[in-house]
Length: 260
Image 1 (tube, rainbow, N blue to C red):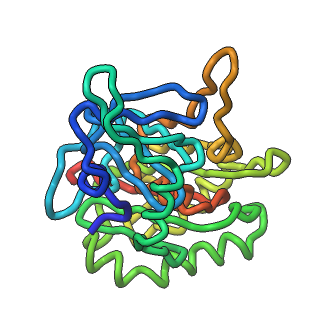
Image 2: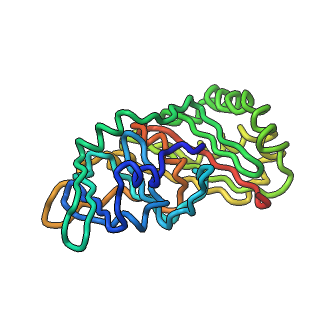
């Protein structure tokens, strides 16, 4: 089972037609059908993935990278309408949608959160990364990973002996406290040594990124030009799940073997 509710559920609940449109709070519109299988949502936010992943009735994979994801808090949705030609045949207002969202259940993650399978690990930690200049913090991070070692080995397999790649995405809300991703990356590579791989020199591709999360819940307003949505590239929807539940400060570590 995935972390999110899916577009198919939204289409079924609202009985949306193939011409259904979404109207944003700045009154720009968008057809929903092209995104039907690329819609993910929680009770706080709607995500539009492009290109949309194929629909799997047994559950989608939250850890496949999407080329781009538009992140929309529900307060930036004005309504969703069924349309025939130029005529709106049925309108679901934000109040209608929020009333339904209040009844749905979404998983609430316990952090640090681990998703693992053969060849792939995703590790989510809440809060701003602590200063990795501090030796105690490096030890704390290594201990956190070590506590998950048995679960990682059961689901990911034993420490890999070949080249691996690591992606680290940090989301932060305080511009005055931009994290030091270089030091964080070194600490994380050390923490997973002997757990995901034998030696951290096996990390042949390292990609740390930093995202300011302040704009994620920004209100779209009707102006001379539409405001841009909060959009991210080359990222899986799973990395945005904490954000979609209202968490603004966290980081995600993804580890992949080249043979996964």
